[in-house]
Picture 1 (cartoon, helix red, strand yellow):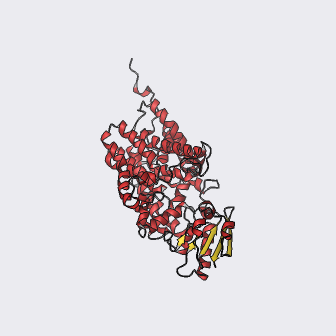
Picture 2 (spheres, rainbow, N blue to C red):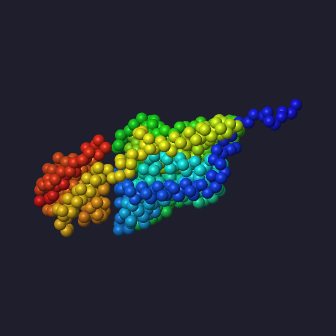
Picture 3 (cartoon, one colour):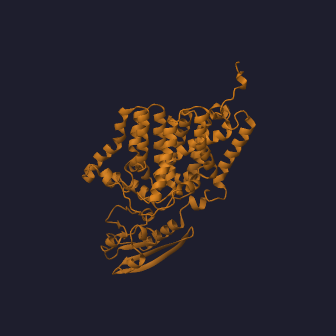
Length: 490
């Protein structure tokens, strides 16, 4: 007997419907990106923060001064491709660097949206909303860090691969290690993807980035293998310690917030259920390029921190390198929670959808450990403000022409308007450099970078012959005691 079609039970399929009305979907992406751009520009105008005190400033300084010191374009720590692309923006100061990263996150939102459409994930506009309201992503948009460029390059390559523009996608992936070292992980995933697609002829293209930079750097380092020999993270020492295997599982909450984390977890659950319910193939473009890239990246960082290798510091911000993938997986989770679990109940899915999105939007502005605190996260820290005070003091008590500064704190370069790579003007505050100090040279010690990066506790500095302790600067920065001491060589 034939079964009436209306009685046949089908699996919940998130791809069948969308909770966003068609009228709103039309051109909504441009309105959303425009609103995001306005918010970003206002943030740049009214908030002077730099994202963090360390790497954000260092990357900016490399980009800014690379035209004066071309070898900086080949510095492995600074990431050569990042320096090359960001350098024109850095010539306009740190504000230029913020505009650079804001432009990147706008493009990331657009390409993530297009990728969701190509993968036939419903409610693709929400993938951009998820990016906008991931708290740490917004905070570090206004920094000099490399994660935004890495995230954009990764999602662009995935978008191209999905659209069968394999050579262009593979070429981009081949240069990822020169934006962030985790690009090596993504290269391995793409090698698996190419093998699955039987695109064997494109596998050699995965080494293009290394070949190009090996040749470019040969004239500076006289070593064709410098891209490996000078890799700053290629060591297995416990330089920065180690931590729990699940460290990043906990830290991810502080990167994207509770509501997006919840939808991300639902997204992970939805994959095996859709494979079973809808008889879809386990291996697909989405599985390999989105899910597997994220899991490989996440697992690698978890192992690096757990084992204390490759100079891992357990920094949660590294997860922003795959924030577009998080957004797409979370979008599958959102669709599963609405369209999948309530396929024929429009009211229920709309109520659940509205509640989830409302919570996502207000979460960054509520009182919680992952929220955006504008005075703390978007303005100069008290430590940086103290550095500005030091610059004002130096202006009143200037250094004589021909004399040098000795300091390690990176933001001092910006407020003193000093080229940090000009050894005739500045040297790191290390014990061996300090031995070369001459009469009239100024030494600025701080209680973090000078100690941790340059191995110079204040007592050892004070014992140097001829150094006079001139003035101390003290501050409190987020419950951390900050101290600077200015010495002058007599």
